[in-house]
Length: 164
Image (cartoon, rainbow, N blue to C red; front, side, top):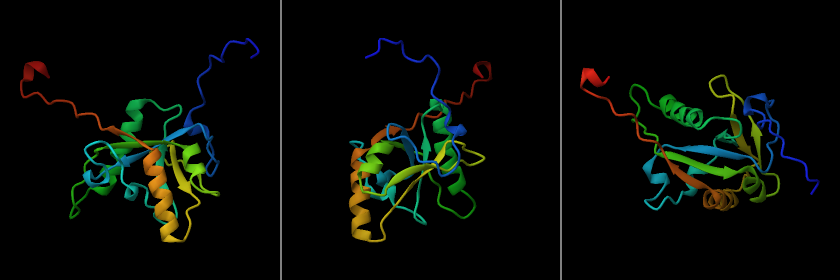
């Protein structure tokens, strides 16, 4: 211990990280939960939540991002999936997991920045094995290390013009 006071400056915003930069193991990322079948009533997340598509799993960074912006990013995922002729999706919550737990799940696994115009805090979990049985073990470990947060209730809409 040096006796120095902690640095009062806020952590750098996630938006400042270039694409493909590995994230710090102490950083936490969130995955939108868009199906009730991906989480049970006790908040236990299913491994299917972390099934990679094209070798990646999309997540959003929490460091330097306000809580409301994180929920908006999760809702954006749902909005992109909803559309004419598609089943209606609902945001049930999010799964938060540390990048360190991802990296510890298998050598070569990591979380890297992947900013998007609609979400500068977007990131990818990468390094997935080709073997499906090994992939399932990793998805199970990541799901078990994740913490579920239920989506906030939408604001009540008043039918009384005097309240609105």
